[in-house]
View 1 (cartoon, protein in one colour):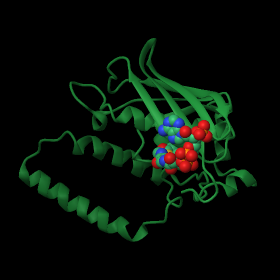
View 2 (cartoon, rainbow, N blue to C red; view 1 turned 90 degrees about the horizontal axis):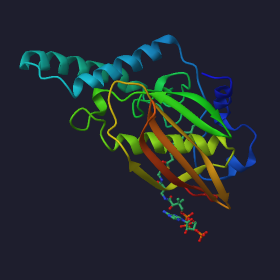
View 3 (cartoon, rainbow, N blue to C red; view 1 turned 180 degrees about the vertical axis):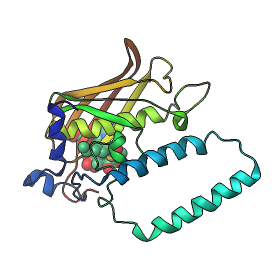
View 4 (tube, protein in one colour; view 1 turned 90 degrees about the vertical axis):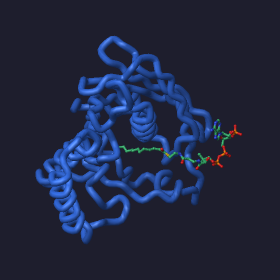
Length: 217
Ligand SMILES: CCCCCCCCCCCC(=O)SCCNC(=O)CCNC(=O)[C@H](O)C(C)(C)COP(=O)(O)OP(=O)(O)OC[C@H]1O[C@@H](n2cnc3c(N)ncnc32)[C@H](O)[C@@H]1OP(=O)(O)O
């Protein structure tokens, strides 16, 4: 992670009245859990890949289902309210340690934009070896959230997200995504971003983020 990326720890926006008074968002603070958390998330990602790709005999599936049920039983009592799990708050891990997000790593985080690199895996397969079209807006939307935050805007939500698919997005190879604030107009923040594979443009995205009014969820 670059020096600039260290700013990502401003996630909690301590002491920022604007942040405190806009919207009804819980406060998210970055965490650094022990190494077992990274191992757990990594193992779960492997399971996600397997869950969408195996064609196993019944006895294997029965054994796997037994183990999955046991695992759910083990973890069930430890469910925490939103903003309290390390998922999504472990900045150093791919996808901030959240299984919802593809395993991408933040490389640059600052007012001049956010850049992240990573790959789509078997779990993200759409058809014919390419990433599912819905995974790109997911990644772009999360990027937009980070960009608006890194720019220093109060808590905002996506009003629209427009994606232009320019080329097939491959799996299992390193890609990059990068974007920045283009302009600000009152509550509105206009952001553009692009996803690339080397020199190849895969997708472009334009979004409008709106600063939440007091009490807006
Ligand atoms: C480590 C880092 C962590 C950071 C980690 C980051 C995490 C990821 C963050 C992801 C963020 C999300 O995905 S958020 C989830 C997806 N988004 C949502 O669910 C939002 C659902 N929509 C809403 O809640 C609402 O529509 C709002 C709050 C966005 C806006 O409602 P509102 O406050 O009533 O605003 P409204 O008066 O309608 O509009 C205000 C102005 O914006 C314009 N406007 C509103 N919507 C649009 C639109 N779609 N297209 C064009 N213009 C629009 C209006 O014309 C108006 O312009 P004028 O007349 O003033 O000129």
